[in-house]
Every structure is written in C-alpha cells, then in structure tokens.
Image (cartoon, rainbow, N blue to C red; front, side, top):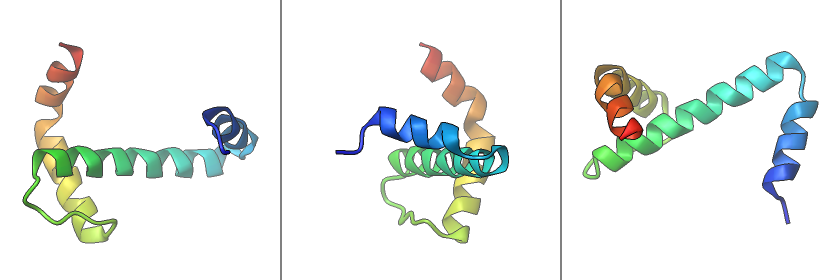
Length: 71
C-alpha cells in the first residue's frame, strides 16, 4: 500500500525543479476540484480549456475563498 509517508519520501527525493513541477501540478488539480465543486453543472477535465477556465474563476474568487476557508 502506498502511504502518505511514501509519497512524501518520494517527493523529498526529487530534485528541486521536479518538486516544483509536481507541486504546481498538485495546485492545478486542487483548483480544478474547487472549480468543479462550485460549478457542478460544468464538465471539468484535465485539459487546457478547463484549467484556463478554473484559473480565471479562482483568480476572480480567491479573496472570498480564502475568507471562507479561514472561518
């Protein structure tokens, strides 16, 4: 079974550039998930179109999202 500790060890073994790429990818996935949760009627996929739409939405809503996360 692949555990969180295994993942963290693997990530720590990565070079700096590879780790930055991995973290950027994880951030994009999180933004896509939040976008889908807020827009259930939309089809969201791991595509350039969805990513651009989700990032635009996120940038427009980041302040309200941060406020709701803190509460």
